[in-house]
Length: 151
Image 1 (tube, rainbow, N blue to C red):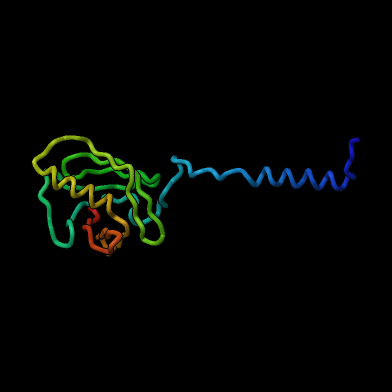
Image 2: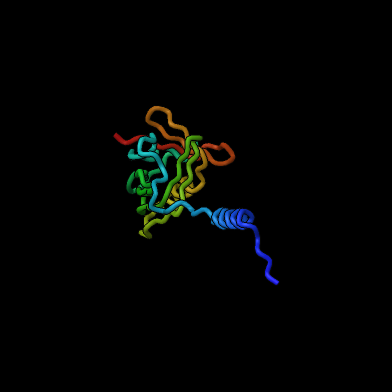
C-alpha cells in the first residue's frame, strides 16, 4: 500500500531537501588571476633597492638587489646576481608574505650573499615603512633587512 503525503508536507520536504543541497557546496578558493594587493598600497609600484641585511650589513654585489610589486601580486627584481620572480601577499596589518620565489641560475662570486637576499624575502613576516625606507621583520620580530625607495 502506498501512502501519500499531504500537499503541504510534501512541499516542505522538497524545500528542505533543496536548501540542504545548496548549502553543501564548498566555497571556491580565490582565483590566481585576482589581485592580491591594493594598487594604492605604499609597497606596490615602487622599486625597492636593498639597503641593509640585518641591522647594519651592506652587501657589495654586481648589481643592486631590488624588487618591485605589481598590483596583481607579482614580484620581480634581482638578488644582486639573478633575476627574481614570484608572488607576494600584503595585508592591512603590515603583514607581507613572499611565495613561489624563483631565480635564474646565473653564477656570480657573491652567490652566497644573493641567497641571503632571497632568504630575507622568504622569511619576511611583517614590514614597516618609514619615509623612503622599508624594513622587513621575521616572525620572531627580528630585523631581517632594509630597503630604500629608488628615486
